[in-house]
Image (tube, rainbow, N blue to C red; front, side, top):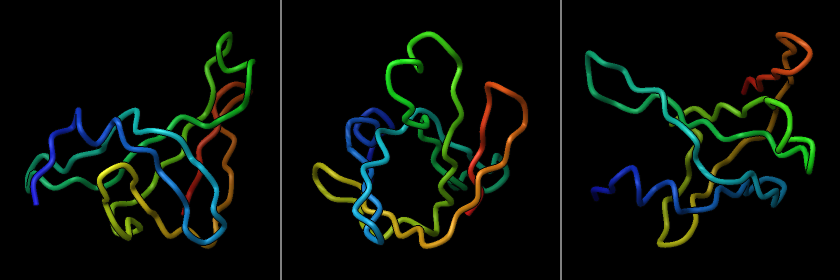
Length: 94
């Protein structure tokens, strides 16, 4: 199966463990030596304030992706902890 980045960015990401809607892909981390995708990056949903302030991001390792469907990307994330880097930027580790 091959997909273009523009096609992947249009698919909503859902966590199958809790049914949470995580959003849409903003960016990807790619291993430049192998050409493989290491993780996908989704902006953290924080409501209206995300329009005015830089918000954190959710980094989802590629091996957490369960299924890429026609409209959705299903991920399996059981445990996560939030890491604070500064007041406005937050990162999630899985």
